[in-house]
Amino acid sequence: MAYQTGEKQYHVDCDIAAVGYGLVPNNELAGLLGCETRDGYVVVDNDQRSTVANLFAAGEITGIGGVEKSMIEGEIAGVCCTGQSADHCWRHRNRGRQFAKLLEKSFRLSPALKKLATDYTILCHCEDVTLGEVNQFNDWRLAKLQRRIGMGPCQGRICGPTFSFLCGNGTPGAQPLSARPPVFATHLEHLIPSALSGK
Ligand SMILES: Cc1cc2nc3c(=O)[nH]c(=O)nc-3n(C[C@H](O)[C@H](O)[C@H](O)COP(=O)(O)OP(=O)(O)OC[C@H]3O[C@@H](n4cnc5c(N)ncnc54)[C@H](O)[C@@H]3O)c2cc1C
Image (tube, protein in one colour):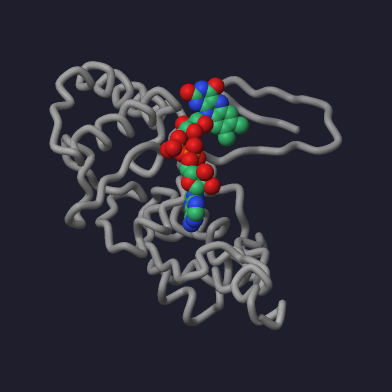
């Protein structure tokens, strides 16, 4: 495998290379509840309030910054939703947010990655949709309707961020949420246990 950091190229002998291309939060529930998102993250105010009344959000769905940020945001959400002061939390949360910004900057996908995929590269493994079939669209919904990308069992969880990076606005996870219940693929027996048990 060959890879490049800055100007320097590296070669590593290996059988299989597993490569990660960024982190994307599971924000489907927030989307279903009508929370506004920006660049794939739930928009919150200083008290962790989302744009939906009485609905607070904390952790990775508001920005990926590790466990410390998630926990302090959770504390702020808990304290503020019960009408108490979260003054003791701001410094800690600001540090977490700064770390999240640093993480985002350090791991931002390089535009050079766009050259890796060809027209024949499969973006949607559930429905076998190639980049060549969808790169004329810059709109996720349109591409879904026209080419069935994101219509399989994973419902775009894998190909959605990739599409967004390659064909959309360049930010993985930034396409509007279109989750429907059940959000994750599940067994019918979990949905209708009473029907299966005959009770
Ligand atoms: C392998 C790995 C190693 C890590 N190591 C570190 C580390 O060393 N240091 C560090 O700071 N951070 C680390 N992290 C990141 C850290 O785990 C996260 O920042 C933290 O857990 C985020 O907390 P959260 O509450 O936002 O999300 P989570 O802890 O992911 O909790 C979200 C919960 O919501 C549930 N959920 C999601 N969608 C649905 C749905 N539709 N219906 C029902 N439930 C749902 C999930 O099952 C999960 O239980 C690591 C993460 C991973 C994956």
